[in-house]
Length: 423
Image 1 (cartoon, rainbow, N blue to C red):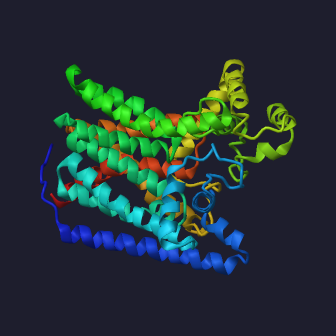
Image 2: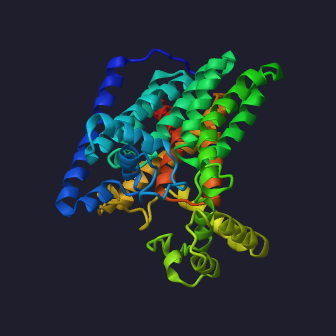
Image 3: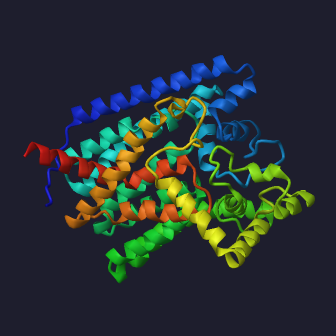
């Protein structure tokens, strides 16, 4: 049964956002201080706080005007928006690693606030929205990723802006709102290119909700704004690689590596086949002295051959990646520096954070669908991205971003459960 209570409580919201700030900044301080205790050289300190090298890219962009980890070797395998954002904050606040961490802490707090807003607009219920806020504040994975220079907080934030605009303005057929959605989506793709298929899925969803006469000024504007942003990156990559690269030029290699991965040994890095010196495709790439970006078409052709000749291998890997994204408990491969996943309470935290949210989210989806709430996009979001990650690469970080589409329904289920107990 639908229950509408739109009024919000600013004091409660501010209180939990303050808790979010304290948790994330405290954990960030822990990671920062332990990094400096544990490592001696500056390069190792930066690496520990910046595992994927995005902060180094941002500094290179600021100092040399190049998106590259090595001078003269321009990156096409790393999307540009997060490094650009890091370069901007370093320009104003200096080159200390803590500047990038502080940015992620701030974005992590904004994520919690946006989660409240999205849930309020979907369910029109302040209590459900407050439960979503609490889940976002205390969700361990979101605390961790706010304390190191991973892209995940920014990905989640941009996703929530997009969802928020859709939930608030979709029925108004506002050109400005769809332009905002297109910009948010374009920046999202420039942060994490596997989200590109979400644009097509969203356009189909929007078309099903909007009269044909409004398509040009809504869906068309959405796609145009997104393409203008993405088109600059595509043009730049085409000039470097002499071929069309819609997102990042590492899709072929990660898809191929995921087909070679030993899923029975999660403690072995997914990149292990690169150094094994046995696979004929990798040996061929090495013999031609190609980078992974240059060899992307070769890897895609090899993946297609596996699909045609060994479909059970291809779809078996796909199945394993989907399961890895959605199983409610962590595995030995889910380890990062200074992560709570290294604690002895690993399984406990996994089951009673991500696992509990998954179960509540599934139940809440059934309840919300029964009660006719507009959760189509919230369902579409994790489903489409699970398929994309299942085709390419599935790690714990990607599971973390999919919780954007799960936490609101989990909050709805939690509210239903507590109401039942009260009655």
